[in-house]
Amino acid sequence: MNFPTETLKEGKIKILVPKLEAFAKKPSDYAPSKAPVFFNPIMELNRDLAGLALQAYQRLVDREISVCEPLAGCGVRGIRFAAEVKGVKKVLINDINANAFKLAKHNVQMNKLEKCVTVKNEDANLLLAHYGAPRRRFDAIDIDPFGSPVPYLDSAIRALRNDGLLALTATDMAPLCGVHPRACVRKYGGKPLRTEYCHEIAIRLLAGCLATTAAKYDISMRVLFSHSTHHYSRIYARTNYGAKKADETIKNMGYILHCFKCFHRENAKKVFHSEHSGKCSECNSKLSFAGPLWLGRISDKHFCELIKEEARHKALKQGGKIRKILALIRDEAEAPITYYVIDKLSERLALPGPSVKTVIEALKDEGFQAYLTHFNPKGIRTDAPSKNVMKILQVIN
Image 1 (cartoon, rainbow, N blue to C red):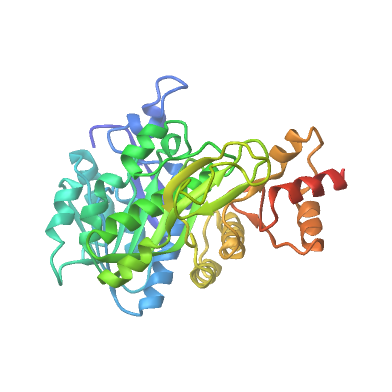
Image 2: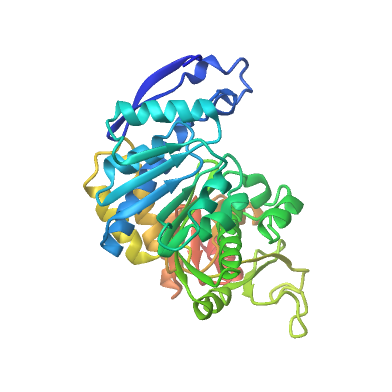
């Protein structure tokens, strides 16, 4: 290679990657984007979970599977799929960057996976379009871009077989979390909201965009697993062909209404229609809204169990953290939509923030559901109205 590189070990493989410290000239530089080939070591946890989820999916469908990673960079993710996931018969990795293509080819050869892994150097959408015909489609496609996955959704959905798995990463959290709302509406077709649970809204906007895009092709989708970690949102969805199934999927679309004064929130199929005043039912303040977005489940409890079972058998560098994340996601999979951040409510009441455990116990004593959430260590999912949560915080203090 005509640029500085180093060899790293990740999972079961060895990979040659750009030596990132050589490309960060000043402290503000984001080295992965400055390097000739994109590689982000922080995304190792994302890649670990991707392999576990792919193995869980393969066990569910109980067949040999083909996988495509159309935005591969140095190829680490796709190569790990080939080396670590049982039942993978072929992996196609691709990058439009000529340096990335050469580096990925080298990494495939270094890991002796030429028989299983094919490397291509094409535009991602053009590549996926080649596999849109019946009997050419992939069992699983993993879209992990620098930014939004939306430009690749249509071609990815069409290149996925019936009962396939589509994994999507979104790193453009500023639009999804409401910092740039117009950009979010343009890209994802839904309005974001800068609330304390904006990372959940981000997942739901991404899932909603996928659902409506898939429905155009008479394809339904069900979110099996999702997580929000570091600087990105990630979802795994299972797709099925059929117009009626797609119609059922679209029924999960709707809005989250939020009161910034008293923290009340509610779900709605329509925004401020003839039967809704647009006022908060608790304090009569004006309600804000996010959406249209996905109001269905953002993780499936059974699938989480399958991933957790896979994690038990893998020696991963961040295994402890992964098991903790999986346990939280499994437990909150069927919990109420959105969560309260205890410090945020305590601040509004001018009270010290109690422990999350204390608040959960108090909510359960009052007969409400209460769950921790992986989105925020100070977050609690509950079916209790905001006024009841506030009252409990006052009693505790």
